[in-house]
Length: 179
Image 1 (cartoon, rainbow, N blue to C red):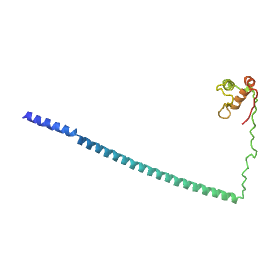
Image 2: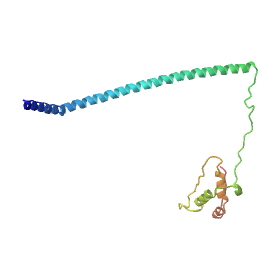
Image 3: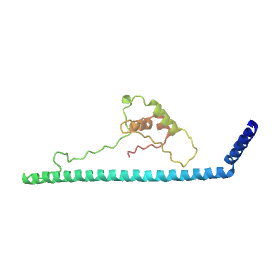
Image 4: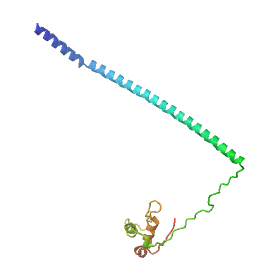
């Protein structure tokens, strides 16, 4: 009898495994997983909509608060303006400011080399670019940019290279232009 029960149980388990491994059950599981995935995307879309709406409401509340602050400032400015008129104060826009404009003087090629420190390497690099043909072309105009923040010595560096004896002897004509 134990043998018959064991055979029946074995047959049942084999049938169960066959059903579980059948393509019908696998296909049904895939369809279920696809439905679950689509549902998850729909839930995510709804949550995004809620978040967008909440952000819009927050922005509207901030805009209304800013509008209220602007209206308050405008009202205070009108009150102060009315007080100025009541006190018979005149507007003088230029008062307290200098009416002269500061003129920027053009630079010259002259430089006091005794006051320049630590620019020898940069000067040598610029002279190397000026005096050696790196790209052979008779008609080419060579531009060597010297860039940097104001006050770091760009003009002084150009003056040092311009006044160098090697540069003077290499070029027939030299011109200093202030731009």
